[in-house]
Image (tube, rainbow, N blue to C red; front, side, top):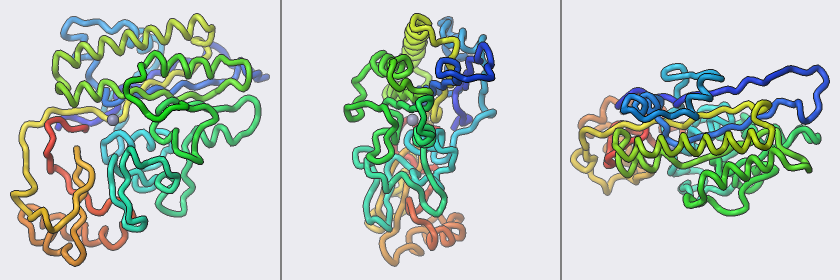
Length: 332
Ligand SMILES: [Zn+2]
């Protein structure tokens, strides 16, 4: 596995500070996530002779944080990390511990298509859990309104920002449509937003299809640079670029797999249920079989002691066993 990390965080610093704040002068934040944008993709692409001038312009005028300055949360997959980004909480606290997981209390399995109920998103304990768009909207004055386009969690019923996509998540909706919609929320006359969150599923998809070090990935990073350039051009035309704090980040990186380990070689698959996948398998032994699955299986015994403790307390996710892969490319 290569090193983990978010890609970069770019801040376009406000031109000025005012004591008397009108809406036009209020700090506004545009949070953008490019899914699976490994921390070193820009260097990789630039070193192959392909410039990325729009990313570079933001870097030259902002602040860059590279790995290991910012680390993603564990488990390193899309839904948990995006919810960590907007709640400030680790996964065991906000409750979204995988893209797919079993909850023994609900006796239900969380999947991305089955994720719109609030009960999955409001925490695993006493701690209040709410994404930043809810906190911002709760201020309740004309200066605070949130909008999010396809950010994980933003379409959950009862937790939506004031403005959000009116259609269910759909990969085929282009970046330009998503970006222009959010820009429209910032610039509309009636209740413009001061916080916008924008999610795009690339370059993660390209990484899973072709590999993180592929020629296709180079093309995708250059394409994303053009998308960002188009967005900046519109922000400038609308006159809000210089007063917008842009945070450009990601949820995880990606590494090429060098070896497959098959769980079936170590433990009988009829003894457990399986949830999730890359890069962490969620193994839930069937009733009464915890000892035989975990403590008697070769190579699992080192997990036995700590998992025995977790087993009695865990609300979400069952058991987590690392380094068991069935997929070619793994989010890290
Ligand atoms: Zn992701």
